[in-house]
Length: 587
Image 1 (tube, rainbow, N blue to C red):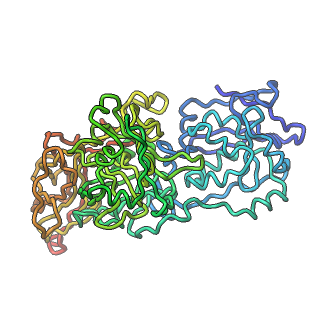
Image 2 (cartoon, rainbow, N blue to C red):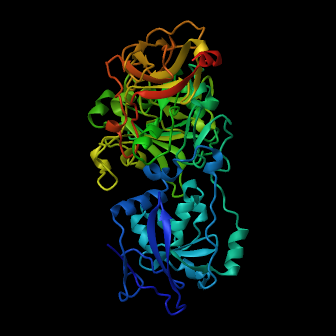
Image 3 (cartoon, rainbow, N blue to C red):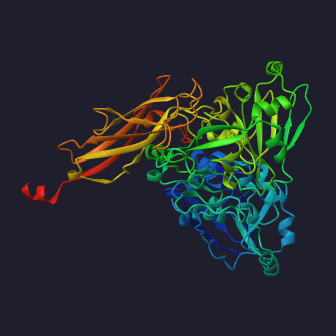
């Protein structure tokens, strides 16, 4: 039970009213507002009297839901965005309720005095003043929320569009204690907040947007399988932070932590000229690919990816192994260290950069094919894909393929990054946000076998007169395991047919089979089959098998997890068979 602290503003106004704010799918949230100071506070007596306490009941589920909504990074970033399927939805801004004239007026100097939990944590937003002291301990981003203490929220919220959602603004309104003075409001309006996303690159209009800020989008499934090598413009985009502006002339890649070696600093030109150039064709897949199917079982937290958060490209650059050797790495180092950490140049307002790590044996293996890539599909890396240099870790989840690479650290520990420690991990369907312990699960590295149907689309209509249906899709498995078969069913899995696999562009000479353990690229597949005579609806299903005979599970529910990652159940698409008009008349 959370206790409401006594309202400090009772002497100002005798008005007391109770309002209800709807939170998440209709959950009611009682809010007591009294005069200038808000009575609705979380069980702390800070800054107020202990007499006259009011109570409201909210269990831990509500606390976690609120935390998920207001989080700015990683696992909880996109909970409020999972319904956003278009750029318009992603950019919708809901204005806060107009201020009540009875609220007290504060100057910016008064607000600035409240910059700690001891003195109270006050912030301003669009001219209103909020006391968020009791929310600080619940903030999933930890002390980062204190960066805005005593000042405006706008520069910080600009990093994450989720904060502009209507329900978040309604929650903020509970903490409102007053209005900023007219003079200080004018000063704030005269200072234009810098949008950290204003320099993001242009994107292809065909991309289906899951989040605008940061930008996350996937291509339409029907064009995903048109090319064995995905054009860079429609290669899925997964950004956690604003795209950094990196000057290639001043760029330096730092390599540290090699026992017995000296720190190494490389320019882009040195990376290109000192080390042999290698090219690898490799598929990258987001850990959350096909998360939307898990949402249909039970809602999860994360961007609502469809089936196209996966793409295939050729990557060129220096081998990570060669660079580590130049920095002094020797085989005996492996006895002392076991991880290679990567830090990107993309950062949040605190200066915290995106980071991840991979096992050292993958990094230095001759068969690991880990690249410090500076080219994608034969051209300089596009800005969205890590220009000027990114890590490409074939066979490994996309989250470890750090973009805009700034630093490499050989270490005896994993990256301490949020995205390595508290995100991109799998859990039991029984684990919820009240019981989850991220330390108990290993970080995802290799991904399980995967396949999906790109054509026909869900709800498509097939003409009976066509007499047959063509089904297309992709298949891939992590860890360099080669997909050896894709089974396709037109009747929901009762009977099966084997699809034809494609490992190169159509019309080209088929690529030779990759060496064992180095099948980094996907297989496209296709099946043309007669329409079942009496069927009015087809439930098309696909499942892939890799060379270790790993197979996809038949349903989503047993693999559901609270983050919606590792979604690789049989993919199912229902289509309607349309009878010819003349045949219908005969019937």
